[in-house]
Length: 221
Image (cartoon, rainbow, N blue to C red; front, side, top):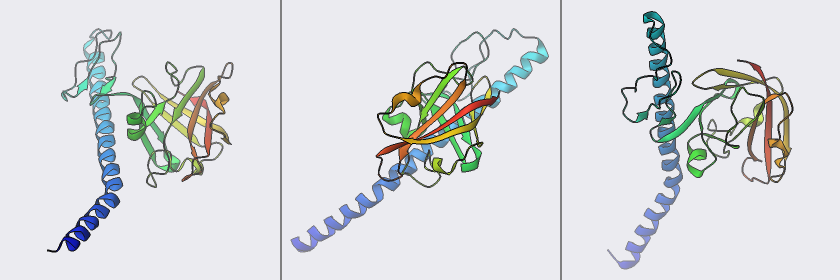
């Protein structure tokens, strides 16, 4: 093979790798995310079974739940039965679900690069869903059609946002949708006496000059 032909082959292989890499990376992230959701749901089912057994047998409900069979799931002791706080080494807060846009994503602690690759991140540490205050979440766009917050712009006033945690399931009704500049941090402010949720993502889809803000108010627990 001539040196010129060898160079051409190497360039072609490099081009294929460059084209395929984003797809391969997305597929890896999808598998990781599916593993996180699957482990969380398995742990939840085991937790519910443990709670039901405790009720039937009259066991002390202040004892921590036993560690699930999956050794990659860490069950941390607490003052009541709880789901594990870490799934496969990642701190998980729960699951975010928006049925209208077929969204089901793990809620992860913080907005690190890893958290936003694998799910939806909490923006302000210490805030919890269902409580008075503003539970703010951030997620990527411009991925695949049904992934993360890519379809957030399809939501309307009145649509529901559901947050599922170890303790409860919280349903919010959307009451405001807006587009703001990235420096508009007032969207994180808390409204006195209101339990709100705020979803934040890039706008428009492929050129993130602004932020799309979706706000909901607690409807039911």
